[in-house]
Length: 126
Image 1 (tube, helix red, strand yellow):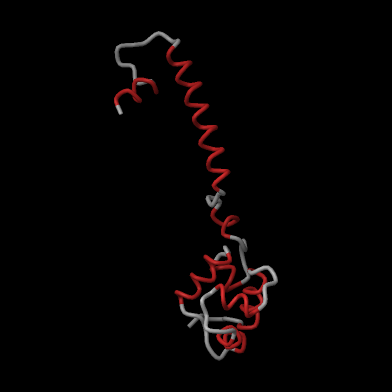
Image 2 (cartoon, one colour; image 1 turned 120 degrees about the vertical axis):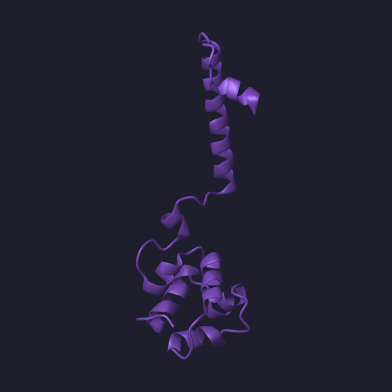
């Protein structure tokens, strides 16, 4: 059981998390056998189990904490900060590759000491 759980607010947050989708659409996205389960949550007759909370969170990309309390960042991206689109990840990889290449070029032009641990020599060892 979730202490101080407000069932009506919880269902309102579910609807908000799914950006105005109907209860039927939300139930389908969550793999429920109809909207009755959501209505039961709203009336306080039942509460979702932990696995269902995870499913709601993952499907709608909202934090479980926000879903239950209405507090903190709503979207997972806002609370964790490491969920990036594939395009953003590729852009970061290209940027990092460019920086590594520039560092390698700079390291190759400097005089080397006997105990050189430059990026280039480390790459050769790997």
